[in-house]
Amino acid sequence: MSILRALCLTLLPTGVLACGAPVCLVDPDSLALTRVITFDDIHSGAGPGRNVDDILPLDGAVFGERFAGQYVAAADTHDQIDGTALSPLTLMPGAKGQNLSVVRFSGNAVINGYGVAGYPRREAQGEGAIAVLFDNDQSDLSFHLRGGEAGVALVTFHRRDGSVIYRVPIDPTGEFAVGFARADGTRDIAGFILTNTDPQGLAMDTLRFGKPADLS
Image (tube, rainbow, N blue to C red):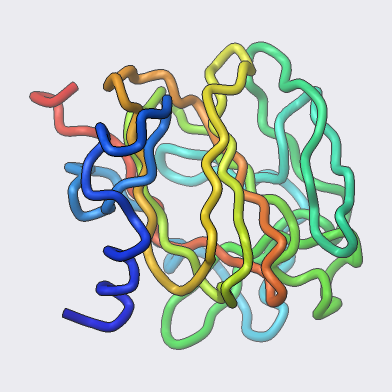
């Protein structure tokens, strides 16, 4: 077992019933998921990465900064998302230079959120919000955190009507995968937003979602 895998298992509860909340932080390997987005096939760049000022549609999900009705309230150099998402849930990009970048390092590509300092400034890299809107509602999902330095991240889950299902903190952050599951199995996660106050910022890699048909 790798050091990262061992760390992940010490941080995450092993079952959905362990948390007693609407959305539980779970071992990602416990989830049967069929869809994968890795970002490796997207044009990317080193350093600050390739700047993306618009929403980024991929197979099964679209990436941006926030949802319509919400706004950015900066916490120092980090994005924090306030306001009420409108119905139906609609993805929005950030301001120019404050949305996303696709960064390639160590042979793979990741999605970076850019904070209020703006692209390509180092203090903005990984400090912006990353919002994801699924084509179809989900009950379970997972993704990899990249670049975490023992800070704090927050994942806010939304229904298709914009209402908040639950907010799940990740504390501390690090280089590992995290899994999430609706405690009652309801398939109503239309999208989520990842924000952080990590000292080095965070990136996202390898988003997994979609249950097999016989488990739907």
